[in-house]
Image 1 (cartoon, each protein chain N blue to C red):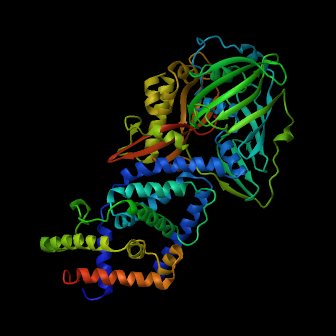
Image 2 (image 1 turned 180 degrees about the vertical axis):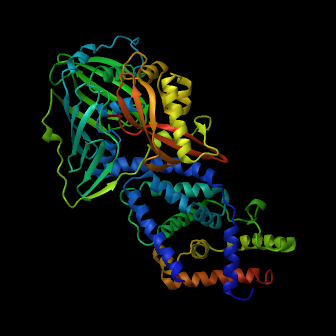
Image 3 (image 1 turned 120 degrees about the vertical axis):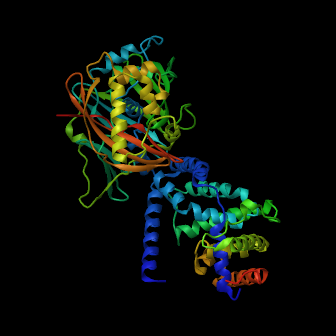
Length: 193
Length: 413
């Protein structure tokens, strides 16, 4: 990590500490700011973890309503982003127990081709790859899918995932490696980066 | 694909590309419930002193204080009409006119508080207020500002507005205001403990502090209010937020009651500008307010405040409701009597100055800003009133509405 990035992370952490302090003082604006700040990332975490993606808003709703109820007594250990991401993962896991694993992927759910893809041929390939990856992710057990999503999407270090999940750091890392190996084996031959 | 780093990059792109619902849709689903849950949690679990702070600073310490601020809502007070069934407590109005100060003692969930309040010579509004919570927190006003000391944090929170106090002062207007609200009921009974006759007034209103309801008990012999309960809903549902069990009246009070010692090493922090979550929904109708397209926030705030006061001066009730949607909660006659005041000397007749945006904040709808305005009344006096403007963005359309007054009006030279 460069010095500039590290400074940025420190600033973000400081902002979160201030937000949490204001949140505990009961300021609605602080809750709104936390929601605004992490909404998009948490929605992606939920979308990646849920078997039924129609529930992403419900998951976020439930997480923030629960979080809001802790005002005045919330104690932040680690990062706020990590805490909220884990809450989303827990909610997603609960919902997944009552919904079937994704078997097919609707066109609207498939990630859009990246804007930097050159030409329609590659765009189509990217779209196809996304659909395949979507299926591959759905095949992963919840606890393994969580590690890869929390690490790659939420940028949580393995140490924090391990702490929040109450597993050893080696377990977190091995789950992550297992995930990547499995995804690579599924996707192998479909893409050369 | 060659190694795990490549796979990670593919997964990153996959996650980045995941489609999620639009921000507006998610905000609309999540924020109202989350804010409501936060509000409820604060009431249930907040430490006493914090509760006092919120209660006091939003004028919820006592129904009388809160009711008074209802009037401040636009210098805008209540008085549905004198045509309602005869106000059975008319004698109380006469009994109150000689008292310039009041001491209120009561309980709120988690503690007790006492308030000392003194009115001005004209008997139109409060000038000095001190509220002391049982856990050591103190709220007071001084020279146009409101302060709150939190002993646990050794911090004084302050704001440049009189956000606690009463206007009108205890007396005719205030009681008429409460008594003529659409929901007002008067019940006659007897206090079983003392055997004295009591008259009970029940009423409810939604104002800039959200929905509120009260029960006020009058002693029939002395004609004075002797107890009061206040709820933060229109239906007197659940435990009251404040239960004033002792109200004592004085012709005056010594100045030193209003002196508040603060530790020299206390930190001073400006309180953020806020509006209650309960009023946000009323402000969200896109048909209300004015467009801010092509205007800076400064220009838009100035324009809507100027238009609002022009509507007040011109006694345009529909325009007033459109610009300040909270006014829709009150009857037309009430608005005329309290805001337009066609037959009173303290009605607004001229806009002297609209100042630059002062304090700013954020509500779930968007930015809010306090705009100071200097006005001339028919009696020649000048008053300074701050109005809170709510900015909104709906899709590609930007607009703003007036939430209501920020604190009580102040007379200026």
